[in-house]
Image (tube, rainbow, N blue to C red; front, top):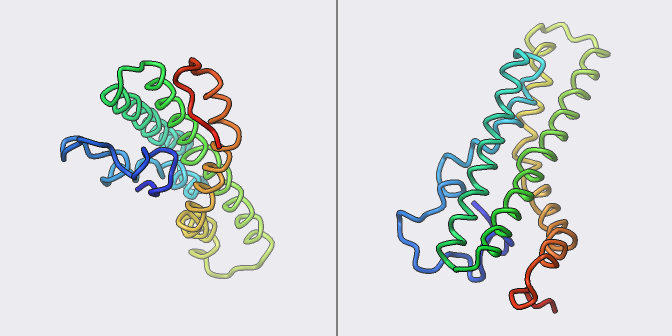
Length: 178
């Protein structure tokens, strides 16, 4: 789930007046795993059809859109400010696109490609290892890259995206900056 200090969470780490029916299904349930579909697809890229590979991005993209819509919907229930709701959904869309699809997909793609190139230059007698090592290395990297990427995207959001989006708000609703 999201970190308590994440910009995606309201101050205090939760949404006020939300019961069980309002829990974040995109962060607090197994649906969260759909956000990793493209990393799995990148890991399996050498072994699967192009259609299956592209389907992994479709699943991850649907997750990103669903989560972004959910953050928009949550904000509309918390405030009458439609602009704030659009910003909440927009911020979630940018964050999720970067942290769940673009950056990890690129990283795993490069890890699998480099591992494939390395295994091609080394004489590996075992056919199983020769065929599956790039995929296994890619899968093994997924849990290792999550927190560093999330943290980097949090910094990017705080330093570039949030101020840019905040500048679009009407003056009366701008977030005070220290």
